[in-house]
Image (cartoon, rainbow, N blue to C red; front, side):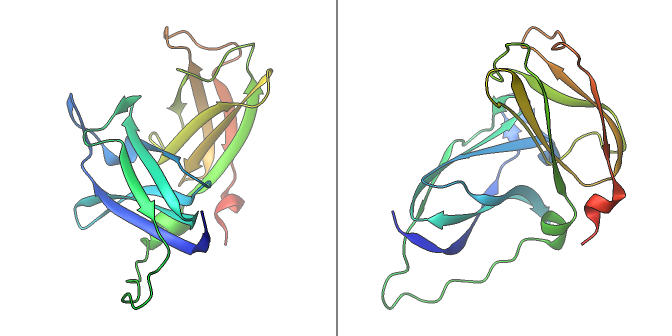
Length: 186
C-alpha cells in the first residue's frame, strides 16, 4: 500500500434491492479498505445516483450499500485505487455537488449500550425536521456505550429511536437531540 493524494472514487449506483426500487436518500454506505475513506456519500445528479468517497492509500476498497439493512442489487462493489502510471493521462477532475459536500453535518453522540452489541440495531428518526438523513450508523464504543452518527442537512430538535432486531426499543430509547443552526455555518 502506498499513500496517494486524496483520490476521489465515484461510481453510479442502482437504488434497488431484491424487493424493488428504494429512495436513494435512505441508502447507507459501508466501506472496507486499507484506510478509512473520507467524504463518503450517496448523491443524485441529473437523475443518476452515485456513491463517492476519497481514498488516501492504494489498495482494494469494498463498498456495500444497504437500504433498511438489505444489501442493494449489484453489491458489494470492489474498487482498486492504484498509483498513477508513468505517461498516463492526467486524472479527470470530478467535483461532488456542493450540496453533498457542504450542507450536511455529522452529529455524533453516545448512549448507554446496556450490554447490547450494535449488530442488528436499527436507528430511525421518530420526529424532527428531517425524516431520512443521508447516512446513519451505530457502533459499539467499549462495553458500555454505543456511538451514533447521523448526517443531518437541517437543524432542529430530533427524536431518535434505536430498536433491537426484535423490534423492541433499547433501554432509554428514544433519545432527544438538538442540532443547532450554528452547526451549519461555514
